Length: 249
Length: 320
Ligand SMILES: Nc1ncnc2c1ncn2[C@@H]1O[C@H](COP(=O)(O)OP(=O)(O)OP(=O)(O)O)[C@@H](O)[C@H]1O
Ligand SMILES: [Mg+2]
Image 1: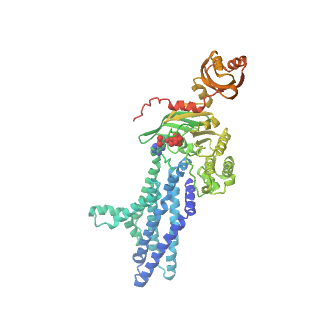
Image 2: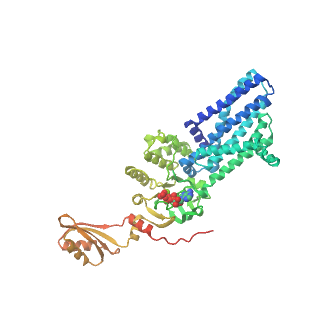
Image 3: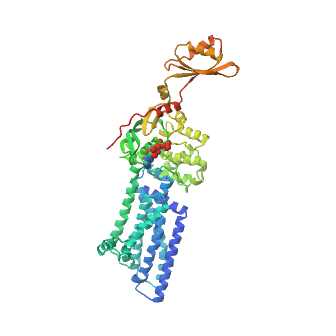
């Protein structure tokens, strides 16, 4: 249960450093703005098939907000402790690497859920005026949770690699943009390559959820993606066993 | 309580320590002494569970630090060389977190924290943010954090580094108070620290152990001659020739006359013979005033320098 101790400390650190408030504000402003403008768009120009209309547009924009904000949330998780040197003490406590990783991951994940929750307020009000089918709407949120969790896993991994928070965030952006690029650069690569690459695209996978289609294959992909990066993180933490720890200031 | 057997740690191709073996009995305070880069921190980190050795093994309270890492870490309190704490927590919150991490729960937790605060004399800053504390106080919080959970083994990596003399004395006092509560292994490159606090000293240089002994035994073992410091109200030449006639005197360092005809000089004698009585008698018989007669013990400093600068015995390079 030590991962809960780690998680609690991370969460309080988010709030005490005001990162939490800033990221929350940015995320809510962006997502709220997008929701409002798409809602106006569809009210003005019609389009009553919500899943392929309003919801798809809203979620596609929301994923960018997540992509912008989440690397900033995960960048400090290990980088900061490495930089400050607090990580050394952490390794002398009777707690396994997995628990440390789980605690930090959980902290970022819970915070992400906390960010996601208020974004439902707009649709909630909308529902009062126009009761829509809930299933496609919730499917989009399932997609957002999976996508965001994947971003977090990726961000944690990069933050294990470097003690520099800027590098940590930038590295995460680079990886995420790669998985995005895989989607829109279909025209450049050969058709066979594209076939394989498309299977790897986070954003293509997400598209189904945004349209209200839940496919177990997509879920499996996200779960695999998440565990893959968590596994890499664990390996990276274990690297101190032959590389040692930083002794510099 | 602590047993290290043939510990070797390599970082890439660089060998930080090689074939380090030693034992520490329960209740002992042992000093790890060596110059910068000797491998003190590396050894401490292995014992503290930060990373395992490349080869060899170490046990703490019977637990292997590599294979039973979590159990070993459960009985160890560790004070890192680089005191890094979470600056956004108050001292008490931090110790509370440490207790949770060490699995100290219930009544024991509050009790442990209070005791750690007491021992390190930081009770009055318990509600301050760590980020607002001075270095000395952070250092103490670092020691307090090691004490939480009543570890049977304390590993302190340079606990007095960077403190002012008063704080150094305080920390040393604290370490001496820990005697009897547990086993302490501390590292330092300050010799007087070992003399002041430790039962035994392990001297390490370039990753290899040079000597393990009590400070006084080391002193005994390594000195090649005894030296006696004299101050006598007598003419220099007369005193020197008088002493020269005594058997067992190896050398007389040329003395110098101080004011009022007082001569100060140092004689070297055979280490197996105590010539102080003979010297005193000779001086009294010559009707000089004997102002001072003192056996000069070789300081650990001298020993250390002798050991460290002794040409290293060739290390058989370990290649796999
Ligand atoms: N992670 C690492 N990677 C490479 N070399 C390392 C690493 N950690 C330590 N070393 C090297 O191992 C040697 C021993 O280092 P160690 O920190 O144990 O010395 P020390 O005795 O504690 O010195 P000091 O008194 O300066 O603290 C040094 O030469 C150091 O540069
Ligand atoms: Mg050191």
